[in-house]
Length: 125
Image 1 (cartoon, rainbow, N blue to C red):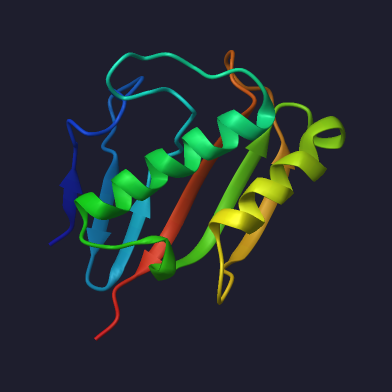
Image 2 (spheres, rainbow, N blue to C red; image 1 turned 120 degrees about the horizontal axis):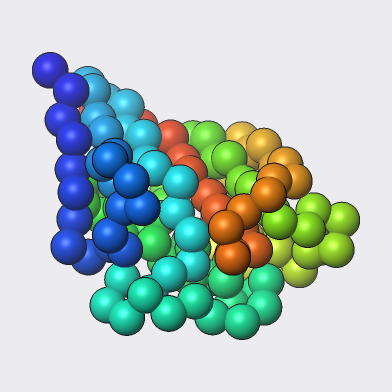
């Protein structure tokens, strides 16, 4: 049976969805923005927002007992793809070290944020 997780350690979902879903050894996260889970504040700038988003992804994975090292696929949405890609990529490269997951990065219209990320992770045996 699939398991669905909503965590108090993450920003309140903006709609009727869970933070994390898992089935067997596969874990999916919702798309996370840079909102601080405690205050709802959003930092300024692509670098700070990228760090904040990855912090939220880490919290989501922790709710399922995983870490960034377990991620196999990342989907990134950037509000300003051409303008922010290099700065985003620098922060991303600092946070995802070692074996790097596959990634898709696209330009998207986002709601008052600069970056959103969702991931797929796998439990190891």
